[in-house]
Image 1 (tube, rainbow, N blue to C red):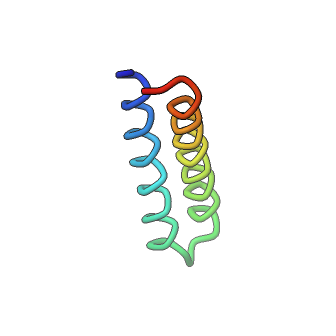
Image 2: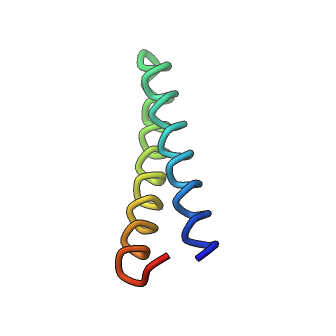
Length: 58
């Protein structure tokens, strides 16, 4: 239960940070690539935590 909640919070934080800096540094091509990957990793963690919570419960 604690791990699922921690993963959900961490995933949302990573996703939010990646999206924030993706929009902030949209002119720099290399930064966009890094922040897009960061946002995708955050999305994957969030989706995984939500699916775990849906299947097994919190």
